[in-house]
Structure formats: structure tokens, C-alpha cells
Image (tube, one colour):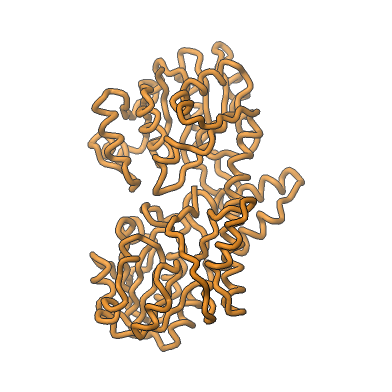
Length: 452
């Protein structure tokens, strides 16, 4: 089988490499010259563990190719996947489908054989119907079927999510389209992955509903963390006590500075708008959006209040810039508003992230300095702020920090450090949702799953 994927971004590239690993011949059409040149040179335009090796091995095997010529990519393809961006539209929060429909029109005009047109991008309910109407209008001479196959990939663990998914969702209304999609995912039968066949609208809504529910869990535990700080409880004990209930589960109960990334912010906002337009408003989703935005907006003040000193002329070390570890994605990262607020204090800010500094530089104030290592960032710091829970930060010993930092204040927005150990080393330690009273033996789960 041969398929084509339109768009060599995060979703398109990961999906292409993984389908190729399944044994499918995959051609990726990428119109951005810079990104295409990097792909042709074997360079990854995104940071994702294991992706470079997977792409290289499948290119060497002849199953994966990249091209800037869309007709070349779709030649002979039984299915054409649209995997382009659907950012939030300015001013309203609706998903911007400009790229989706532009790609679909190009595909439809270039096709010379019947094919299944599949949306891999996250698209609002009703998009599949509109694409089917467009296909009927532009190519009445061809049997073009439309399907929806939403992705559920978490940045930092996308390859594992694709190869060992919880489920595969396919929205299709013809047996031929369902047969094609089943054949593509046949290797997952070996691990008994559920493949859920639905209608178009249902598949499109599943993606939004799943992301909104997970974002709701993150937002709920963040509100519980604030409550814990007020009453002297420990949010990790609370999260563990909740998560041991099988009806709730432990995932996405990790308190922090608020969710960011490429999915949760735009998808929750889009779902709220979809529901409003359908006259079935989702008040819970609207609240999640509002609470999360307020949390991120207040981070700077939270850090400044914790420092309890005049920060003008002081040195602040920021560890982590990406919205989560194992990615270089800065989209809606909580670090951005926090650093913007800190920059206004007149402090000298030195930031370090293992992967995201190149992406972060154009998004942050020009006064921000960037260190080459965590140790370099920490050296001489009056205040340390942990924004992202990279594993290398977890290994920083209290004694080492005390030796490197003249200051004694740590604001740990990811709760990666042991409060007792930090306080024993002489630090004034501020975590998230960790009350001052003694707590039990609940451990902090290092897993990060705050986004798709």
C-alpha cells in the first residue's frame, strides 16, 4: 500500500515515519522550502526522541520519501492524509481551517485516481462533510471518499503513542474507506489495539472531547493545589488518593504552572466555540480555558511574591522553557508570561533548556540571557525557578545548589525537588500545592502527560 501525507510538521512527520515502520510506502509533501531541505538532509525540524533514527531507517529502506511536489507525493496513493496546522483564529478561538482546505483543494485538483482523503489534523465537527462536498464539486469524475483519523500523540512520547496506542479512531461512512484504514493499522492487531469505527462527526468530536477532559483534570488538580497551600495539605497525597480510584485514574493529576503546548490551549478554546455555535455551550470547557489562562498570567506575581526581595539587579536562573520535557515546543508555554513579568522587575534573567532555547529566543524579551548548561544558569543566582521538569534538573543535589547559589530561594513550579531536603540545605523552598504540615509517603510521579 502507498499513502501520501500532506504536511511534514509534528503530526505529519511522526505519522509518516510510524506508518513507514508498519511497512507502508509513505510520501510526504512539504511546501515549506526550509523544512523540506532539512528533511531531505536528514535533519529533524522538531525535537522528538527517537524520530531522527526512525526517519533515517525507513528512508534507507525506501519506504519513506519527502518532496515539495504534491502531485508526485499523491501519485498512486490509496489514501491521502491532511496533516497541516489548525491554529486558533485571531479574535475568536475558532480553529483556522485555511491550510486544511487549501491542501484539500490542491490534492483534489491533482488526483488522477480514486482515493480516500483523510483528515489527520484536528478539525471542528462538520469539516469532513465540507470536504466531501468540495470533492464532489471539484472532482465529480472521481470516487473520492472522506475519512477522519484524529491523532492522539503526546509530544515527547509520540512514537510510542503511535506504535502502541490506547485506541485508533476512524470516522468513515463507506466500507471501502474503512477497509483502507483498517489495512493501514493492521500491525496493531498483534497487540489487540481497539479500532473504533464511527461516523465523521463523531470522530471529529472525540478528539476535542478527549483533550478537553484531560485539560480539565490538569486544571482541577491545579485548583486543588492552590487549596492545599491555603489549608496546609499536600497536593501529591491528594492526587494519589484520587488516582487510586479506578474511576478517576492517576494520569493528568500533576500540579504545575498550567497547561500549554500545541493541543490543549487551542483545542479547549475551539471546543468551547464549537459548542457555542451549536447552541449547546460547554460551560466546563469555558471554565477550564479561563482558569488556565489566569493561572499562567499570575505566574510572574507568584514568583515575585515568593522571592520576597527587591529583584532589581538580582540574578534569576530559569530552568526549563518548553511547555513540557522531551520537546522543544514553546507554543503557549507558561514560561513565556512568567519570564515577561520577571523581566519587568529589572532582574538579570539567565535561562536554560536542553532543547527549546532556539525556539524560545524570538518569543522572550531581548534582555534574557541563555546559558549553555544548567550549572551555568544556576551559578551566582539569587533566585532559582523551575519551569519544566527535565530529568537532568531532578538530579541537581541540594548541596550542589547551595554551593553554586548565593541566594536561598527556590520556586519549584513542577515539584521536582524534595522540600525537606531543600530546606535542610538552607533554602526557602516554594513548591506547588505543598502545605507546610507533615505529609505521608506519597511519591511524585515523574511522568509528564500534560498534552497530546
